[in-house]
Amino acid sequence: MAVDGTQSVGGGSSTYGSSNAAQQKATLNYDNFLQLLVAQMKNQDPTDPMDASEQMSQLASFSQVEQTIQTNSKLDTLLTSSSLTQASSYVGKYMESADGKTKGTVESVKVYSDGLIATLDNGGKILIQAGISISDSAPTNTSGDDSASNGSEDDSGTDETDGV
Image 1 (cartoon, rainbow, N blue to C red):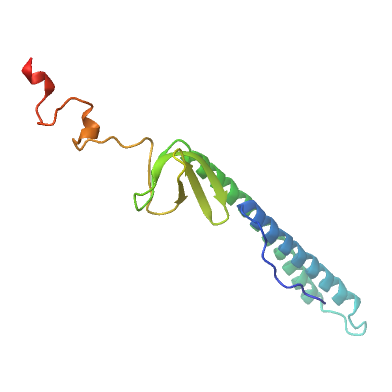
Image 2 (image 1 turned 60 degrees about the horizontal axis):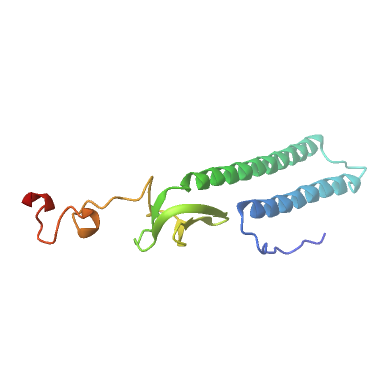
């Protein structure tokens, strides 16, 4: 029996694309298992047929393979759904990268097979991973510097309304 070599899936940028390829590969294995079982039954020695318990064991294995493939397919669907739900929850949130160099409000999130990438309102992009900061809105500056003063203090540090 000829066995195909493994090939990488080109252009598979989404989780769905990679799980679809895995499902196709699993289907080939499932079909191959059926072909082997039928070939074994056709080619068995009529004077010494396969033991009934051995045949039942092989059929049980066949059933397990089928159930495992279906379970994996459903888990892939669940993971994809979870990734999409998680991605949608980031839209509108304020995000800052671990190094603090990239920050802004999330406008969109793209789901890739290796993670989520958030696109910010300022055009920046952040790979969503451990170490990033996420909040409902941009932090307010309460350090007392000029950007947070809103004109209520002059350079001397005294309140403008003191002279009235």
